[in-house]
Image 1 (tube, one colour):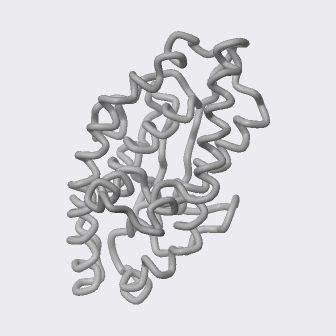
Image 2 (cartoon, one colour):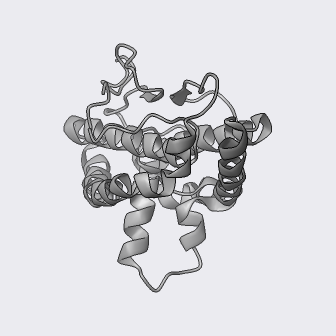
Length: 227
């Protein structure tokens, strides 16, 4: 099977793409059954997929000791602080400091691999840090200066996407639960649900990259990975 994410056929105009080698059959039922436990190291370091994390947070308004990890983990907190510093730098200079950008990109690349594993899209354990994996993030860097107006109003511009991603998270949670049971009973991830989950991961990754100021192109409101 080719790389997934319908996505991933043809190079679309959007600068952010998540490419996943599909794995719907002959799944490892044992690792799927204990996926949350196995994923804890990644969960603590880079958090859960953003759509699932936001939905969880809203469903548990009183919070818990794991909320910070579910959101973005230790490195996620560092990435957010880096993006805040970069926000000021871009407004004054038009450019994202190279060191901060590298750190934020490192976090997002790792997060994509970990999210793929947590969302049951692959069974191979992702590397702790950088390394080859059956899912990868392709991010076209901004050439020249950033759009300072877009960056300046980014906290406001992101609101519609935040609402959409929260709603998407509800559907993604349900799809993942159904897929979890399906894999345990049949050893297969239903193809339709797999396409949905892969597209949801791409959508939310684009939103995260936009929030972290890695690019200025507004994410499409679409599950069409080729959008």
